[in-house]
Amino acid sequence: MPLTFHESDPDREAKEAALHAMSDAELLALYNDTRAATAVARAAQDMERLYPLVRGMKTIQRIAGERGFVIKARRLQQRPLA
Image 1 (cartoon, rainbow, N blue to C red):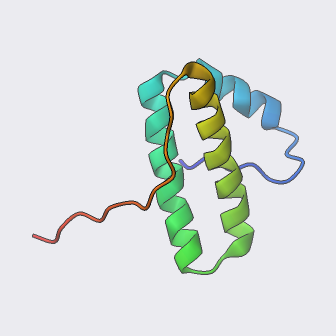
Image 2 (image 1 turned 90 degrees about the vertical axis):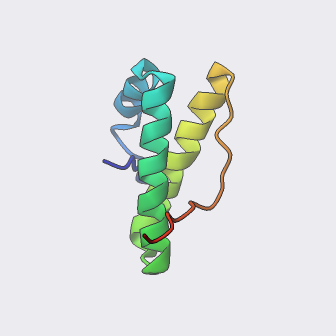
């Protein structure tokens, strides 16, 4: 499930505590899920859905950075069709 943060999200503290408890692999997997949802929202031009997702991505990147690893923002690569 992708991570979202609404502006002035009342659950931000609890969500961030859960992120801090995740392993690096879990954090990266959540980032990838959130990034994929962001791409869908962007393609649909759904700004109301996009902004909370972007806030989620930025928060994951910040927490990863605090741990000493960088998650670079990049375009998702599509798998080649078989």
